[in-house]
Length: 627
Image (cartoon, rainbow, N blue to C red; front, side):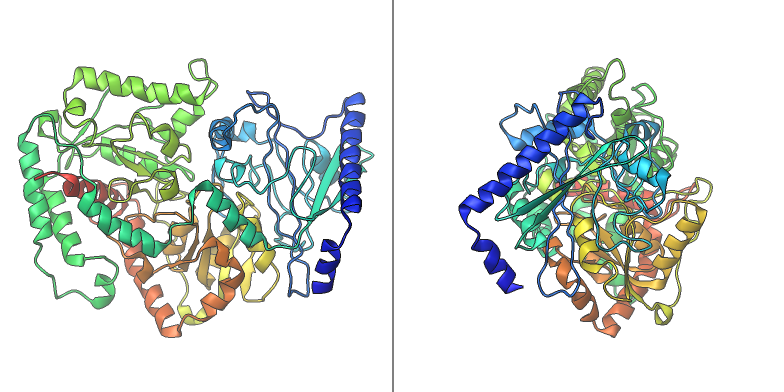
């Protein structure tokens, strides 16, 4: 292998330039040829005239008997006059859909369904229907690991959606017509089917560096090194002491009550008669219990009645964005915490749906990201004029729950002072530990019984070391598959599984039968697999740099979950095997206890997901109150 690499570096500059020139010529010729015959290369027109083009790098990794093709998807925009790449991807991300899916995830909105035009499926020989699907406006991606649940051979329009801001700004870089990544050898292959004469373009970049290192380097360009779980722990301690809300413009009796609660929590008596396994789930169980009791006894919330449906007051209760909908439904109908007189409230809830707001894009009143943000600004202006409470604290005692990927971006300006309860809890994108709250992504299959089908088999019968299945969203999952798909018999790492009833049932059985469940990020940092792993008592292995897990303010996540940096994917199996059996057994036992904190109930129950979300809002607000 070293000899091959030395040979590549020894290639004369003249020969390398010749290869690049030939590649450019072939590409330009192929595009011109297809344009003349009315068949356009797969492209997606954007509102700004940009073209979404994908190139896939197939990396030859060392020390492996089989070739590992690492697929890195590059989003290249034509007619993009924005000089700042960050600003460009920020803008263009709003013209596409980004959501997590795969495995048991089968819930996309109608507008998402209409926008999904990209299919990557390798046609089976003799399968003319598959060939037609692959050529009809699709991009063909090669794979050397075409197994039953291989990385790319079963992708559907739902599985590979347009690349969001995360992967757009990675900088793993190919220009529109040329590639200058190290000393790459470019092979361009064209293929025409007899059915519709569509041109398929396959780019193969054979490189002499690890895809993991490339991704890590690209992340560095985004804003420095990833934040580890231990660093987040330190940030929480620092922010709890320094992140203070502004002093209210005038005092109220509610301020005095919150100040009293803060003192009570700080001086909470130590609870000693609690099982060690249970107490270890929390950063400080005594503090949590005291805070929770005070919340139940004291907290009053005012829910704004302003706002028209469907963006306001109309919850969405199914699919991967269901958390915001279930919280809205239960908050709107709550009689214990909700008050009619806003003067009695400690907190003010803004009942808007980030999913419904996003789905309003391209409707008559919403043509751009700015329109979405302005809609929220107009709402804030309305309640600020009608009530005096927003102006009193500049929104510091207001909160909302939003699960769509975009929520972290279109709430950062006009609602940035609020306590933001977000699924996309990305610390590198503005999520503030100690103020904002991480909202669990809970895929709801049954509105009648959201806690249906919990649990798994006994640890002694879990013979699968690690399991993952899902769509190839973002850049991490393709790398995960390229290292571990079809490599070791105890590593069940697949691409998307069938979405019929049998496929979903098999997905759940894999989770229930595995020791560790891999929760790899998609386009954004969050994934429903984190909560699913807890449901099925499969120790979560979270591979998502900068992801702040749910209820990070009170739960000790390292007691029942593993956090692995994206750059450590090559060592995944070794890390899992190095964990002592005793430690695994204790972590698995803790999952059974922590389940109750992640379950929705039609009628809220003590310590359930509704109460835990509300407690985190209450807890963060109390800690920010000035004496």
